[in-house]
Image (cartoon, helix red, strand yellow):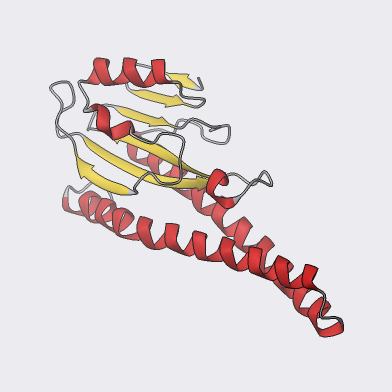
Amino acid sequence: MLTNSQNIILKDQLTQNDIDHLIKKWDLDPTIFTYPNSSIEVARFIPIDSNKLKNGHLLVSFDLLSNNLPIEQELIPIFTIFDQNHLFIGTTRSLSELKPQENIIETIFQSLCIQIKHLHAELVTIKQKIDHLDQAARRTTKTKELKKVTDLTRQLVYLKHTLDDQTPSLEEFGNYLVENKLAN
């Protein structure tokens, strides 16, 4: 656990017990955490029903942890649950870069910026690999290089799908902030 105060909970290495405790503590629908450790989770921004949170919302976005695993295992959902007085950000992996900020919205923005930084770094790495393979392919027609190109294409398609899925949720979150005068 990174931080656990009355108002802000930043939790990495989420277990099912942690999830069950949060569901009970904040009166949450258990289906929020259907796939907490999987890239098949759905990015979304929705209001949530809870007797404990006033005007609560759920934002599910994705972070990418480069650890040389298949892309499906590197993409992880980040669960952000908040109302005007409470914030929970959690994942089954690490949130080591995330630190609580002065307020809930700043902490959410920091989390999203970290996620974008990780995705950008992966895209830069993929571009460098493509440039390298392009040069290698001009010198040879080995199957090994062609397989690497196919693997990179698969990674790019997976990242594009994730970003396409996540973009409407982030736009809805931004509109919510503007409409409620929480950010401009």
